[in-house]
Image (tube, rainbow, N blue to C red; front, top):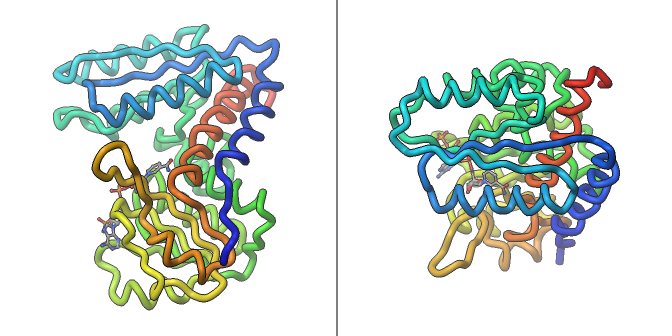
Length: 279
Ligand code: NDP
């Protein structure tokens, strides 16, 4: 049976490091929520709780779902120029009339703690990013903290989104893994997955990765968060049946999720340092 990677524990250790660094700094995260998507509210509350725990101020800008794009941009501009705000996060998804790429490009790069402005995305791509996308950076931190060697390993990432799969594939590549990036049009997906020493599922489909798709001894990171009936969630990996084949596996919940929030806290410290010219 593989080792279950305890994301909650690793994330708590990171938050403790952040809390120490936060002492004596005036830090604040501003979150913009457009509309009232229930899942977004859950995610925002998790971020608020983490901010409170590590000593970072938090403010929520709740805007109506039908807000014109120009007003949303004006709010971002106001936060960009505020000396009180260290980090800005615009919670996704956006209503259909809002162009995601336009909005993200307005967040001032040194305050872009989600690393979604194309300028920061580009820096991260060439290995020069100080602010890194939270979920992929959280995955890399888990691998590093567990002492999992990546050089020369075959990593397969299933899912090519801009916030998870694509940046994570590049981060694994930067650590000298040989990377295959799969998506919904990939042929022979199960075969590709079976080749993986490190297998990452970032799909959004409950228990999609089954035991027959996993190589004996592989390391499996499950990024997926799928809401089942009631309040239960499950990942993209069939955890109960896969665990016997792997060397390491992240559970859902308590795996990658807490690392995403902990990395956001780290990014707020980095943003402060960038704005003060100390990094
Ligand atoms: P997206 O919907 O943006 O991307 C999903 C990706 O999965 C796409 O690239 C898609 O391919 C691919 N995919 C979908 N179906 C299949 C299939 N049958 N076979 C192969 N590939 C497939 O999702 P996100 O990247 O934003 O999120 C992925 C999951 O991770 C979700 O469950 C989300 O909730 C979770 N998540 C968790 C976070 C955490 O902190 N734990 C943070 C962010 C996300 P194609 O591009 O071809 O459509």
